[in-house]
Image (tube, rainbow, N blue to C red; front, side, top):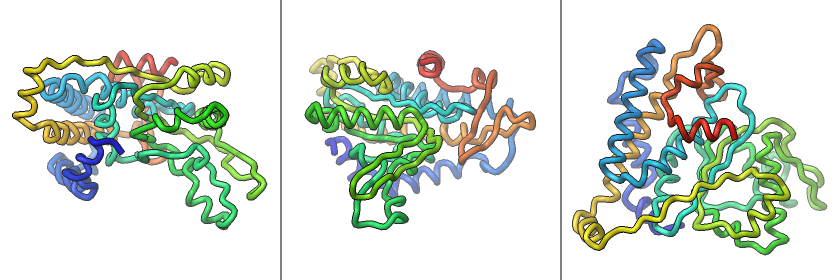
Length: 304
């Protein structure tokens, strides 16, 4: 767990974060009240602009990776999109990548973990009955979810044999067709079904050997390297005096939650271009162009 994760958990425990978000949302119009598509579009645009302006006023360097993260999450809202997407933020330590992951941690349809073993997708522990194993398996837990991992660096530093197995499992899971594996202890176990999810991770860097392995197995992980910012001494001293970084992040998180909450209020259409499926709003065809979400990065991600 990174230093920012530790400080975040100290200042904003999970229960407090969830309660504050509920209180903020309750101040907005009742989500059960139906609104027209035009009103929804207008309100969503307002929430998006508010988020954009707040981030650029408070922590400008946070906007680009946040836009990347929102774009990945919103792939879940595209009707008939069944191919998972995995995007990994690469940056030096203390460069906001963990902050981005934490911003989404307590939103809906999210599965968060600090670290994991790829073998945990489908467990083969011999001492547990099948029903209990199904509760342990991580693969069904991330189905139709935004999968968040705050630090993937340790996973990519394994030896080449282990790394080959790890990348192989991840590549298969990112095909979106489930995962079935065999071991001597449990025989064959897994999930032979469509499993859609999107994945946002963070790492300091990815060794060359990882890229070489992915070159032979197929590109399934997409990396976004954050620019290295050179802060002047005057800026750092001023930031130390104000000591307002975490309160700013807290304010940004609440604005993000409002935007995400408004997005999920999209009215269902009679012609089924907008439907609700697996607790997610799903938008089809030309309607995607009307979604008030990042334009440039989203289009790049959609047509990868």
